[in-house]
Image (cartoon, rainbow, N blue to C red; front, side, top):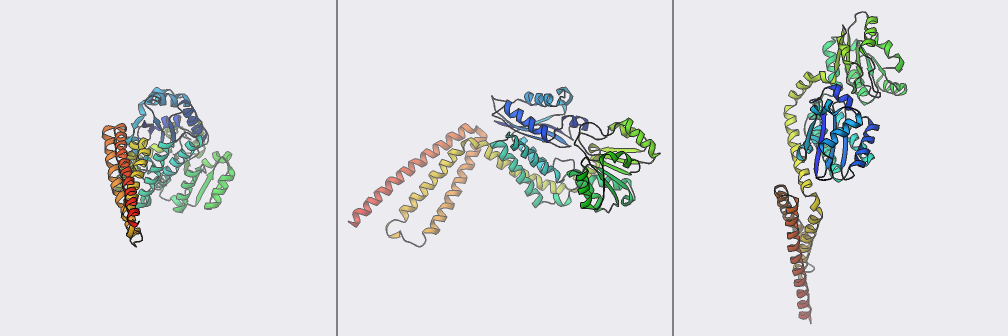
Length: 444
């Protein structure tokens, strides 16, 4: 069995490709259900954000799916010709796949290192896979490993405290272009998680004129009340664009552009040459990219924030190095489990055999006059620790065999040790019976 990742992200594919392959919650569950039905022995998790679309799966040697199967599925499901996106795809297997997921979940593969949203997005993707019943033993353990790595990185490094989220980068861009950002009229389109983060960032730098517009007016009002700003209805968006200084679009509920070049040109004509900063961080995008060609319009998509991101990465070099060390440790731990996962029951038998040997020897030690000795509990604990450490050494060597010679050879090795241990247990039982007999004769 292989762990496979096939996907594309902000590093490999432009936003116009990513948005065509983007999944919402409903389509994610639908796609996972279809994959599980088509490949019942496989496991699947689908991660779709503004910066990436990635399909994680387990693939058997005979039952599939193959890379061609997965690429074809994405093409058919989204109605996008495979030749339009296959050159942007990356594919990884096993250890490389594990390392990739841990880096993604810990935000080390994000456009902005340290952004908190990606961990929540990965958790949501995993939740949807559980809902669709498309995950299983391997991916369950893998994703929980990723969540654990992310938590440890955020606890043991300064990545979290120094992070700049996508929302933070937008605000930084606005501050660079507007000398008096506090008095600028800001329109935030979308009141979801990203919209709320944007509002929070603008409020923190004491911007005084913020309006949030959302398809659900009630949600916009709720967000406005929480931050002391203004909310308005969706059909008022055009009016607000007439005198806005900054427009940030984070609405992703519908397909298609909110504004194409023709419609936006009419808006700009009414503004009579007043400059407008437009930042479109949604995928699919809200504004047609050619709007940037209109005079006095400065349009930025998520892909245009790369310079700020590069500066961000420089500031976090030491933190990133430590985070990478943590990821490597977690990858090794997971791969140790993955390589011997099918011989887990044999490992359990081995542990039980070692424990029985320990019990037999302790019973012989504390027989007769030593039965009521006061150090019995301490000796038992010490013997238990010795057995655990020796068992750990054995398992490490089993892992080495599994990596170098395969799980089948490792299973043979474990089976042989278990048989030897059972022989020792049987011999110990015979010795114990003989000791009991002699003790009884002596007492007689």
